[in-house]
Image 1: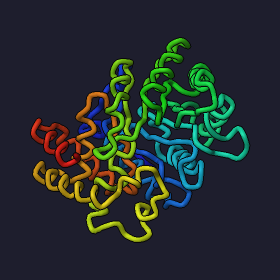
Image 2: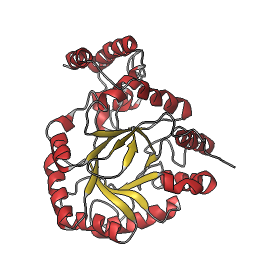
Image 3: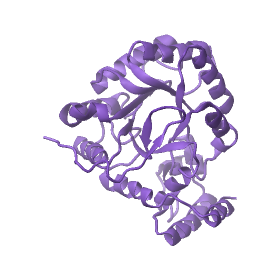
Length: 328
């Protein structure tokens, strides 16, 4: 039977999320691609329990994480039942709805019907009474934002979520969502944007809104889909996601030019005594608005290397300048 490490809080660092009482570990474990029904359960189980043993308390999910859809939450539910149930009050568990999940007019986007039904389904799959954070996963251009935010507020009032967040919202959309929720007596706690050295859109207004409104940022794709590792240092291989260019919008970042920039960043990381992924994670946390980075590690060994970034999170002004020069 699993027993959590007694020293699990000895090394991890935590940051306050915006204007709230909630602390996040600076690195979180995301379930997007590597915890679905097609993945080996024992590998998933080891990654999750070792993460918790090392102070990672935040586990980030969504209704359609897998593959197949829903299976990421099912995997998490099995691990909760087997191992983590006694530690529920030490965990920060989030899920989302907003992308396609089931067929028909009520299984996508941002209607109150979809979000309410999706959260109820997620809780069953994860074997939970509530989630700590419920996100709307992407803006819906058709549904009134008031309805979508009402769905989030209702999740809190029903006791199904403690906090609410949004993901992939622009600066303007985030401000509107925040104002609507304020009118309902609910604080928009967190935004989950993509952010990496090669994907810096949050710096063009979003982080200003987050800072002003007391909203934290939990950042996904911090390694730019593998670009900020050595994965592509020998070129883009035939059959890879980058070669196909169809898996995720960030795959378009993986170009020969950017690979050369990543190699120069790798040299700087070595000067700092870090692996390139570690420096890339530290760089995101150099912004005060950034609360946590989401690791999508395939296994414990990969996650363990990522966690090592907490040993050197500070940068000199010269290092930051050199990074900007490389990325020009």
